[in-house]
Amino acid sequence: MRALVTTSKSERTLSTDDSSELDSFIDHLWLEDGLSKNTLESYRLDLASFALWLTQQSKSLLTADQADIQQYLAVKFPQSKPRSIGRLIASLRRFYRYCLRDNKISLDPTIQIQSPKLPRSLPKSLNEEEVVSLLNAPNLNEPAGLRDRAMLELLYACGLRVSELVSVKVTEVSLSDGVVRITGKGSKTRLVPMGEEAVDWISRYLNEARPAILQKRLCDGLFVTNRGEAMTRQAFWYLIKRYALLAGISKHMSPHVLRHAFATHLLNHGADLRVVQMLLGHSDISTTQIYTHVARERLKQLHSMHHPRG
Image (cartoon, rainbow, N blue to C red):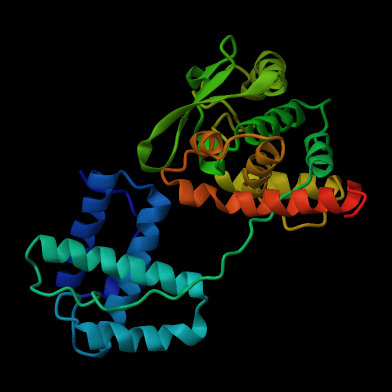
């Protein structure tokens, strides 16, 4: 079987050998790590761009050396953000380690290539009052509004990624147990408690809105559109931005902001970092630790406001 990754127009000018190597590598990532389609496309885009540049140097992916990679990075640095360069280097490093392991090359050309040091940026979030305003924005007199309220409640209650939210099946929700089964990155599954509010809204959506939206059509997705299909990532991005405007929230808004709010608010109310890690589905605690900085800033504000010597 082959990973379902879109081939860009520019890739069609790649040599047969380079195109074949890319196919083999992407299939390897898909089969070995179960990476998502978006992640696989990111790898492919980075490597295809490098391969196209190599053709101008009369070289291929398997004949490139350290000097080629350094020269390519020098070209990309002025026009790319540090994070994009970091991702590019990670893609190259992963590819050439795969090639070395399969004896396609005798030396890894990325072995001495250093990734740029990235500034530790704090995730954007909402305060609790802003979250309440956002949750109250949908029009509950319409089936779609009730659906959107249930989606926002579940997103905030469970700290889901938007891809996880729109992928939830009806059969993966247990209202009696108050949990939802989530399939995250790398096809890893986890059970996440929903809380009473989310359970109530999802129950109401299932009973009142979902049948009205589907109109006897069949769909196994929990959240459905007027076309009778599962909600898409792009459609929900549009919805959450619209509701942020209705709620008077001027901050940059995306589904991921609610995920950040979920983690930050849990820590602010005393949750253990390991628990937050499990709920978010992070494989490494270091990924979760960024939220301790957010919580610490909140504690400083509270101390300044309420302590007599603050």
